[in-house]
Amino acid sequence: MWRICVVLLGVGLLAGCASSRSPEQVAVLGADVADLRERMNELQEQVAELTAYPCRLPNQVGADRSSVGFPISPERIPSSGNVNVAVLFVDFPDAPALQGGTATADEQTSTHDLFVEIVSDAERYLEVMSYGTFDVTFRPLHRWLRMPHNLSIDYSDFESGRFMGTRRLSLIGDAIGLADPDFDFEDIDSVVVIATPETDSIKRAMAHRGLFYADGQHIGNAISLGSSGWQWPGGFTIAHELGHNLGLPDLYDRSVKLDSEGNLPDEADRFVGKFGNMGGRWLDQGHEMFAWSRWQLGWLRDTQVTCITTFPTSVQLTPLPTPGGIKAVVVPLTETTALVVESRRILGYDFYLRNEGALVYKIDTSVPGGEGPIVVGSVSKPPDASALLGPGEVWNSDGYSVTVKEVTPEGDLVEITAP
Image (cartoon, rainbow, N blue to C red; front, side, top):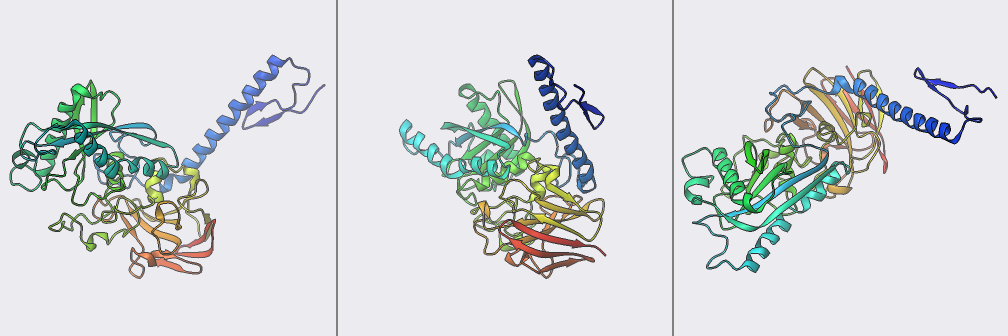
């Protein structure tokens, strides 16, 4: 019996034409349908990528530097799939972790406690930020590695002599060399080196790009930090530094100097305030990562970012912590700048927010990290709680306006107009 067959996208899809076919033929047709559906999904993604292209602003600060532009350097650690990070604990001849002995039980307890306090929660945080697409595993070596040189001479941050970054690279390289006989680095993507709490001159956390080798493996990214100072518990400092390993820039003002305790003053918050984990002074609390950063890392698909080039346009945004839906509206302004709107709620790692609403910020891919590549709010709405727009509120800048038409538990309906 003849039946009408549907032709879709130039591919013949035989729908309902198998009434007289054998089971083997039906199975083949079923496989063909599955293949076609997969191809259709791929085409949809390609169309979405082409549509989003005007909003994928290119990196204009140099391919070897962290940027808010596209693409992220392939030399950074992968942002999807399984990623393994070694965690090494080091002490020094002039700053030993354990005074007066080498009791194994005490040593194990000490490193386990530090790992739980400083590192372990970062694994959950990054999995949540990626909506489950990024699976990072921290693999600690639970013993103190005695460094070959004194802290005060070769590794200290604040002693005169070699540049601090060079000292840290030496710290990491020596730690990897000491761990290598007892640790398998074959599938390691990054290394975290934590100095003993007895050190008072290694406080600041730093992310590094270097050339480290172990077990035939090239390790190009690393993190070093002291276990005191401004490394707060909860895993957020490690998550921030791993963000650099992934290719994200600092969003706080790096020109502001640390105080005598190694902490960042309030002025460092002038670009993004408490929004975004790549800011600097709020690492003792949770933060939802900006939608733009998630898009850079591939944690948001192009279909979840609406690129606007015609006006006026209204878009329904779903809150960042909620999987699915449209997560950002992007309006390209120039070749390097764009306006971004996203929806923030007292959900997930935004539990500390005092109010809810749409957040507006500007992107500039020509600005280096630490100098304001993302700026939240405006002069009238600085990067604090007032930057979140409630029902009927309007954000204006350079003739562009963002109006919140409706706020519900499901998100924000925003309207964007242009000059």
